[in-house]
Length: 427
Image 1 (cartoon, helix red, strand yellow):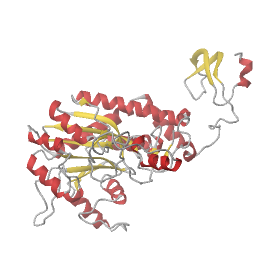
Image 2 (image 1 turned 90 degrees about the horizontal axis):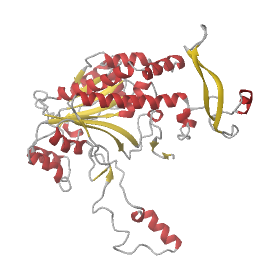
Image 3 (image 1 turned 45 degrees about the vertical axis):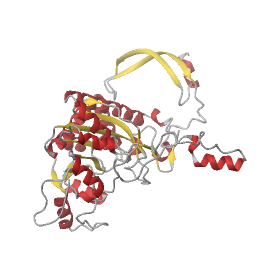
Image 4 (image 1 turned 60 degrees about the vertical axis):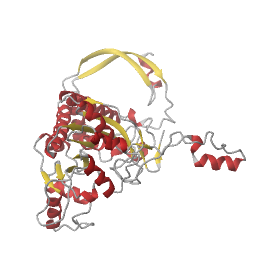
């Protein structure tokens, strides 16, 4: 294409440019520029129908175009930020001699015990298909044919890879994974998705919860440092300064992560601090109840000084069955806690959780009975304690939440290329 034919180019067209990369004039805003001497039009674009016009478009509108919004510079930058963060994670775990693994997506258990799981079935097993066949007059599947369940027992999309990581850790030591995770919770908030990525790690021969928290803290700090030293990180910080998103000081966020160590308080100390604050919380903090988002925001702001803060040793009754009971509790009170932690970040609130695992068979079986978890179907998990178990612990990090925090993005849906949440599953 001749240079005088540039007027035929339209917004959204794909072109191939040939020229010389030269230094920009002294007063230019960039250091270098391309002096073009040839243009090839590779893919035309109808400017009248192209959805990404050169005007302001809301993030809500762009979410309806997940197949196109990555073409925008800001969204493309978040994709590169994600890729670079994964590269730094891989380097970190390799330096600790952790083995990367690929646990299954289809599972037979609800690891978190919340019941917010997606069940799976084939099209032939779907009740909606049966009703559709009846309505159309078509014969239903005969007994013993396609309607027979694909698996012998109900199966689900995974809510966590932890249990399978525990099995692998008993064989090779430290393991980690970055895997898709699914939750059928109807939370339509800036912090929740139905499909998201969870970074999970499991370490063996650990003797204290501090060791697991140290690993999580070192990992997040290492990733942040790597991003801070990269050109992509510089571009994210520069773009954020230029756009000046109200209320978010991204450089301060990164600095808060890089500085340390991060504060660590117990759940009991957190409840005491919340009560003593005199804040008019919508949900009054009570020992034995879970921390609400408003409580977590307060703790990150006041205890974490607008930076990360660990909250440890939650009541056993509100945590899953597999967590190791704490060796101490408040004197004179029957308040059983478990050796676990949540990592809170300002605005994002909980971004990670971990614990020491119960590694002895009989106490684990007792905890399963207490929590109403049937051992049937979980024999493989109890087998891990039956034959040569070692003390171990691990954690899971909401990878998309962490990226949103590091990217200065207010909604987790912006750091996922094709976000899925209640009522929405585009593409």
